[in-house]
Structures are given as structure tokens and as C-alpha cells.
Amino acid sequence: MTGNLYIVSAPSGAGKTTLVRLLLEQEPSVQLSISHTTRDPRPGELHGREYHFVDATTFKAMIESHDFLEWAEVHGNFYGTSRSSIAGRLAAGADVLLEIDWQGAQQVRAQFPEAVGIFILPPSMDELARRLTGRGTDSSEVVARRLAAAEAEMRHVGEFGYVIINDRLEDALDDLRAVVRASRLTLAAQRVRHADFLTRLI
Image 1 (cartoon, rainbow, N blue to C red):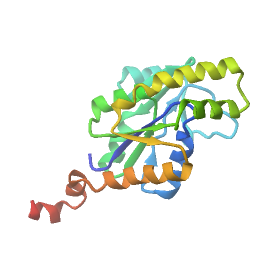
Image 2: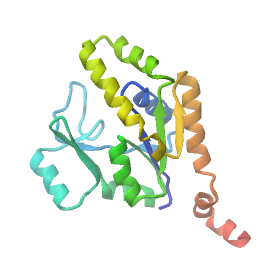
Image 3: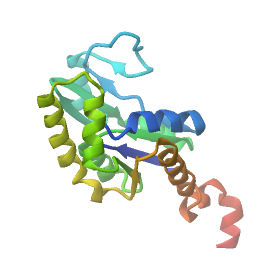
């Protein structure tokens, strides 16, 4: 692997989607992995941009062919990450970012132990509750279920190498960019990117 593989996970309401979007705008060398899904496109979504939209038969055939690096069924729909797409881009030297949950992260780490794991946390449970309630789209019962699910997800923070507390968006984005930049400067990464020069020195 010559490119870096980043795994970004977070509970709902931590601001992961916003942080990843801003990172991709400011670090154009990082490519977002586009997952496959069997759910229907939402208004404004395009095949190949938000997701690769496929039917259940196609998805299950890909599972049988071991085409997925990780996959899961969520609320009756399937989601998965193409193994060949990730491996090909990494081999070409691209940095690839996976925006997945902790379960998917476990599956990916089993095959790419060198992946850079980043977990995004809210500053507190109280703040997370405020953010989820502030959306104004869910009932108090739904918010309570999401908070319980988020707390369960956050117990897996110890499986990730980097932890970013998203209190102020600007600071959290700086931290995320710092992780990306620092991971490119490890000796292992530089020995690949500058092999001729470093081989003479080491």
C-alpha cells in the first residue's frame, strides 16, 4: 500500500459528515470512498457520487464473490465498501477516506491493519443531546434512542488511534487535517513516496 487509508467514525450528532466534507475541500489529495447500497436514491443524489446504487441481487452476488472490504445491513438496506476500488487507489498512491461505523472499521482493520483510525466525539453527552434535539426532526423518544445508541458506539473509541473532540468546528477541522498531514510524514510513508532518496540513507 502506498497511499494512506483513513477510517473516520463517530456517533450521530458528532459532526463527522461536516468535518469530512470540509476536509475533502481543503485536502484535495484525499479521496472519499463511495459505498455501494441497495437503498433508493434520495432527491438530489446521483449514482456514483453519493453512492453506487445497486439492487439486492447484485449486492448479494458481490458478497458471495467477496467483493466487499466491509458490509452491513442497516434498517433493511445493505451498505458495502468495494475491496478492489480501495486497493487499486491505494496502490496508485492515493489517500482514501472511509466514513464508516465502528463495526465496519473493525472489518477494514482486519485486512488493512495499517489504516489510520480517527474517532470523532462530541464534547459531552449533554452537548450531543442538545445537537440531536436541535435538529427538530425527531420526537423525544427517537432522540433518547439515538443517545443510547451513540453512547454504545462511543465505547469503541479505544479501538481508534486518534480521537478528535468536536467542540468548535474550526478546531476539530484543524485537528483532522493535522492527523492527515502527520500520517503522510511517518518514516514508512516517506520511504514509499521518496524511495530512491531514503534508501540511500537507511
